[in-house]
Image (cartoon, rainbow, N blue to C red):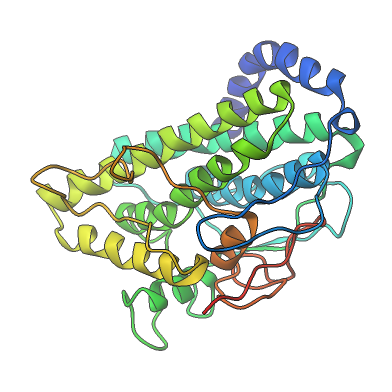
Amino acid sequence: MADNDAIVEAFDSRAERRQERRAFIQSVGVKALGGLAFVTMGSRAMAQAAPTDADILNFALNLEYLEAQFYFFAAFGQGLPNSILTGTGTQGPVIGGRQVNFTDPLVRQYAIEIARDERAHVEFLRTALGGAAVAQPTINISGDANGPFSAAARAAGLIGPGESFDPYASDENFLLGAFIFEDVGVTAYKGAAPLITSKVFLEAAAGILAVEAYHAALIRTVLFRKGVQQTPALIQATERISDARDSLDNSQDQDQGIAPRDGGSNIVPADQDAIAFSRTAPDVLNIVYLDRNAVSAGGFFPNGVNGTIRTSSAFQ
């Protein structure tokens, strides 16, 4: 009950601050903005029928549901309230998820902060979309042997056949579970940035991207510190997860773990110009569906995401 009261108090304190921003976004209206089109990313042409702005925001909302549920269960032992999960499309449950028995008080505090931020992103996007907001689809965040975390860890070579990877079992497992998501979120928003024509929505997307980048840097920093000071295998684990993501999203080799580069740390996965790379929506779906083929469901979204952007792309 104390945790619940703390959550309510925290969000009440933010309500007034967020209300003006949300009202401004909603006053513009999604329909007032033009359609967006995917563009060629590197050697991959993603040109398709141009989705609407509501399609783009709803795609982002699906991802925010996933992140928020993972962090909320890990931090508080419970998911988001049903009042912010309804909408168009089929609403689904959350499979799995439980509270982490954190042993490092700093990691616990980080988890609580990120959980609150991700819930705020869900609420913000739902407000911007209004009645067009999609419902939360079925989300699988279980830590059993048949769950997506275990499948991802197996693909990365962290565990063997039949073994399980439980992201709620320890501080380190939680951090690696978070590492799977955070870099993907940053690159997804980065990929959407040049496609947004409205300054209002571009500012909103840039704001969310910045927060996701803070989250990713925090997770990468803590993993690097623990890897250097306590558990060197953590650093290699991030490299393997990075390779697994690279094997799923497209034919380019852009993803990076946290292994030191050129005598320094590698907290920021940037190119030679210190610029973060981008992922298209199909790239992102390849990763969260855990499938390099053109599919519309799988992995963390066993029934697919809600909305019109729901199919990943096959590549060789």
